[in-house]
Image 1 (cartoon, rainbow, N blue to C red):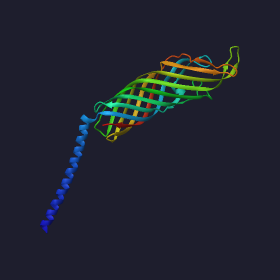
Image 2: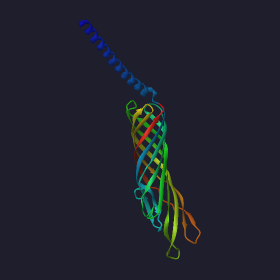
Image 3: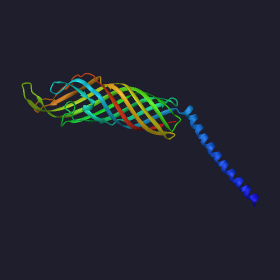
Image 4: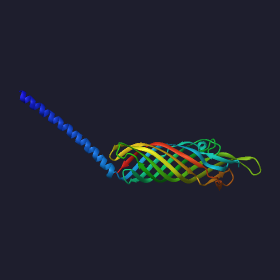
Length: 262
């Protein structure tokens, strides 16, 4: 009996030791495999889609002409409260640490009522496109949370459509009711766009994580026209007045999903 009991204990210890050894080998094998991927195999195409909150500061334009003929500046904070950028990225992970690609965003802008760009009672719609190339550096590609920083440039297209009823002055004095319809496109470069974030690995091909961006740009070209309709008279369409450039900063904060081929 004592001999049998001893053999049983030895067998049990042997089985437990084997299980522990196998678990340790599996874990080490997994870690080695991840290290090898981080060192050699983490390259391939990458697609990301994100939703952000956007805020701005600075100028849409400077020294424009108001409806009354006076000169005026339009600040971003006067014309809009926030935006909702939908971000799309497509690129290639050259190696575990370096990513190169293109980015683009479309964002509806939540306009504010103001005397310059959106008078009381007017219907105002504004949206923006932005896009450009980008480079990123990944700090810990072998980790479950991989922080990164990015540098980009680009172009910006701000489109506005404003229409509503107002009164316009007559050449001989007095005013007359009129309906104004204005369509404007402001475009210009994004001189620099800095980004930072982190990718949390959900599976081999999927990650999610936060993203924050800060960019400096300027609308250097303004095009569009304004149509004035006065009852009983032909509609009059004229180009929008010239303005001066103004620098602005745009900030976004959001979350993105990353789909990878590696």
